[in-house]
Image 1 (cartoon, rainbow, N blue to C red):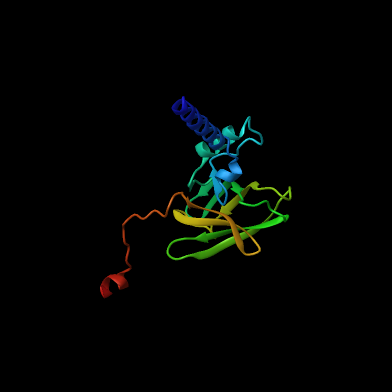
Image 2: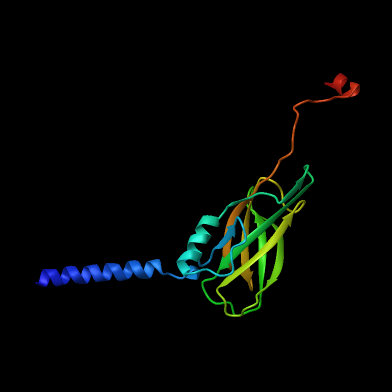
Length: 178
């Protein structure tokens, strides 16, 4: 009888843990992260689990340009959702972009305004363009408040790189020197 009671307690505990892990809030699961999505997500979901499933299925780390003309013009649109560990008690955050290789180089930053004070989730979109951003480079994106990083992610900006024919054309003077 005692053994059956212990078994029942273990089963109940495991089921309650599985249920609580399954029903975790998205802001707890993804805290401190920025999720870049392939498409804009709906504003409402049937449940927290549906929201988490949509985030996981739409999460990307390679962003292709929405417009690209030759080697001089490219525009990338990022749809992103940031999750914070603590509620934001401010109306303004700073989104910063850093090139990660070679070394870490600051590229650009932008102030964003939050509609709802005290929120732990912030969703927005931003356009990145040449010449500040380059094709086939890895970038880091941070969301900061007061110099403190609240969320971060890394991603690649993809697109057509420069085309090289492999053909070298020299003038007569250059050919004589060589």
